[in-house]
Length: 573
Picture: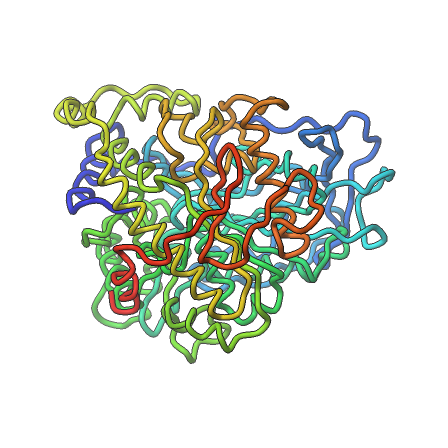
């Protein structure tokens, strides 16, 4: 996932010289270029209404990929807006509302920099979740506790803890296909970057974004029966940083009480990008403070007050410049989960992930764990590195997003000969092995040693619907995010891939993935006996993995890689 020490310079060069200057980044409350939404089912005479402990919510009837009705409740607030003095604080309980709240539109995204179009978007009032519930068979009413209770997939979006949202309209996470498998899906927004993970010694213990996730999770469990969900079958699922988040929840005692299982796609708490020592984060916070012209000497309260007053766009703009190490990645992970002081009330983590994973042997209950990686995870990130200074790729992204084309820059003209060269396979391989494959396999081994059933996979399928086909014609093995478009339906920028045709190989791969993932949510086993469309046994141990390609095959897995000894040093880096 990381490149050489030149990457930080290239990222800085892009932000300073490509398109808008860093001093003129535009800050807008929402992304205006995506306006598409699903059309409500015209045959539904009424809007679905459910009662949560916070109040009544009115949603919309929508139609799944196979024509099944489901209720969509978008933009449900799950915590107080973290504004003013609540910035950098743990999430606070949302106050109940009166009457019926319309849940037709997603809430704002959390503040973030869209690197490839050099635009800051979002709003600090962003702690919202989205709920999608299949209608009960033979009923025209919204599902309730009187119907068969369905498992709940609590999905956490990826994006390196600096970008992303749980939207189905603007992002990748449309539940259209999953709704046909009789599970409930929840997606959430949570605080990102420094606003979500800043740490200041003796003042801000960090992990605000993880605590946001935890608050939403607890709210879903408390209300599950009211929308027909089974509070005893809540599976946390995520990809990339969302996958690492899912694993972090397996290490948190409060989350473990709620979870039925975890699905961690292309992400691990052991990844070098997933966790940072608190003393290192404290240094980055002080660097950010200097960039924001906040006092770093004198009374600590003055520094905290200044950080809370700073404009969110300024925080988002400068956070990438706080990490001066060679481990800076193309999209700038400077602030991550960390270990909080042990005396912190309601702490989320109090040690480094490796130590917490070792303690799983003494933890209860034992949580089924499904995890895996794609063939060439690193290629996605080397392409992003090139994209930071490649106006051709940026023009493609801007065109897909409906943004105006930016003029060619001097920085691009100087680097154009380099950009014509393919990214070296050795770089793709090193990034993928070091940042993804090794920590994922190592995590799987720890969960298994702790007594959990572990299902390890390798996604190897290359098809027309692989995610990267949105940006370049790639016939190479699948890279980071390529499996997501077989689980979710994208819209807006992410809706340009071909529609899955019923008889196509892509549709067959999608159906197998959906069936195994939802089997896991229902039973804790992705390949139970008599599962329709699945005729293979997936071993529940990390010594073997499931190869997911045109066909499903069981293979021996590499329990050790050349990077294992480096990953073992996580607590000291």
